[in-house]
Image (cartoon, rainbow, N blue to C red; front, side, top):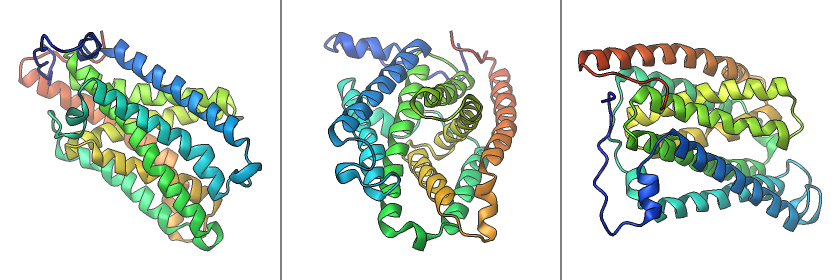
Length: 291
């Protein structure tokens, strides 16, 4: 039996075949769900583009302006968030996802929360708000909230839940959650004009950022906290990058990619050692690769 396996509740005879299918959990179901969400999100983006046109046309305004951010970036994610909530309700997981976590963390996991929080607070303190304007700042804060919600519910909510339902230990749970989160960003190679090198750098960054979010889930004990932590990340990346002001607070966000990767590598080593020691102590076997 894998370490930290979460007992799977007995299925009611009245439960639907749809619910029973997802209750079995497993890595391939997690991949299937992530792929389905990604396809639907891209469909939402295409529909929004078809209805409102490209940036610079209609009510969207120029590229990068507040209305363009709300329509072109936020609206597809809001629609994707609705889809995720509807799916959670359809399988009866809303309470499971947003209730207390069945597997709690350890004190050292607060390092992940602290590093991400320090970077984001520093970025907020080093943004030229006069240059950005209140409208754009508000648009990115609104967008960031839904980015955090959608991506965390999918990868730290559904993926983690599916892996645990299949009886996988927490090493497999954490690595699969971070891996799927990173893999979702591979699509940027085809949906944006960024090159392969930039995309691969983003994939590495998002893997370790995803690991930090998984550790935040463990140590805080509730999905809402990694959602909010993630929600402060994307706005700071875009606002700080486009409207920076020179001060001492700008040092951390300027090196945020390297800080997250370096912190993530250290925490990954500690995580692997810690979980294996606990498994050995309890006489259990921890699987690092999902079956």
